Structures are given as C-alpha cells and as structure tokens.
Length: 234
Image 1: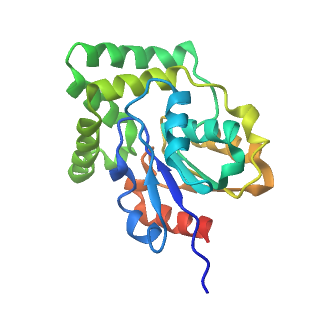
Image 2: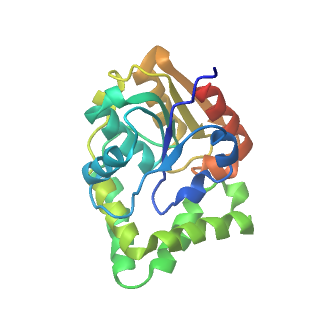
Image 3: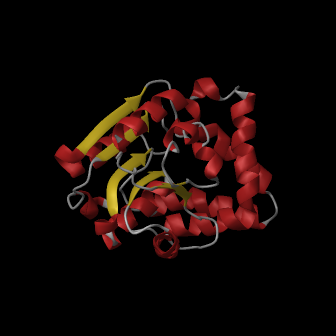
C-alpha cells in the first residue's frame, strides 16, 4: 500500500493570499492534504504561529514565502517536532532594524490615511524582477491578493513583521530537509540572506537561486518553484 504523503502547510507572505501558491497547487495537492495559514488576523508573529499550530495536523511539511518564512522560523522555534520538512522561499532570518522598519511605518501611515492603493503601487515596484514590471497579468494578480488582505490586514501584518525575533539562532537547530529558494533579482530579501539561511542550516539544506526572478518566486517562475517543491516533498 502506498504511503499517504504528509500534509503540507503553506504560509503566504505580506499582502498575499493562498493565490500566492496557485501555480503550484495542482501538483502539490495530488493525494496530499494542503492547508494555508491565516496571516491577516493577528498583529504578532507569535499569534500567527499559535493559530497555525492549532489548525495544523500533528505532523506536517511547512513552506513559507517572505513573511511566511518569518512565521515558519517561529514554528521551528516553538514546535520543531511537528515539522517533517521545511521550505523557505524569498525570506530572511535577520531581525528587523530601525532602518528596515522605517519604510514599513511609512506604509502603515499611508494605509491608515486611506491610501492603501498607493501602498500596493509602491510595493509592486519592489516585489518582482525589473523585467516583470510591465507584466499586467502578474500585477493584477498581486493587486487582487492585496485587496483581499485589505488595509487593516496589511497593517496587522506589518506590525507583526516589525516585531519579529532574530531567527538566526534557530538555523543550527533545524534538522529536517530544508529547501531555500530565492530570486536572483530579489530586492527585498536578496540572495546573500538566503545563502546565510542555507549555510546556517548546513547539510540538510538545499539552496536554489532562480535567475531572472524577484521576490515572488512562486508567481514569477512557477515551473521552477513547483519542480523544486516536488523534489523537496519526494
């Protein structure tokens, strides 16, 4: 009898919904239970993790992109025994700093003033590789996710990101197969930060840098990411 694949928990990034993983879903869901973490209802990473752990099966594979990676690191800090394997896409283990929090505070202020559309426009310029900025279908997909999260969800997420812990001490404790993916043109969490994660995890980590890709690797280079995730899950 074939072994039932372990469940998979997907964690979206800032301003993202399950649609972030839509290109991968058909391949990943074959015979497998998939859950998507709720990330717009809480304003701390700790609360997001508690919600995830309450909803998730006892044991599961875990995949997070960007903010989803920050949440995944906290899961590994709190409940590593529940995770069978880990995928970290376009994220960083580094803690926030006053310099990185300043633009987040500015975007929160804009959203609170009713200018969330402006926030979405500004973020778009940084989210994808320069060569994809004219991709209208991709822009509209990203905009639709942001609208679904909404201004208040965005504000809660930004506050959670600004208050996150330094995940670098967690890296050496990770003992499960770990996939680290980053777009070569990721301007938000660049390749050197992904390499730091892979080096910190060590022999259990596989590092994949995707040419011509920015921060939203699942949407920008879906075939490459899908193949990598299938290999990771096999």
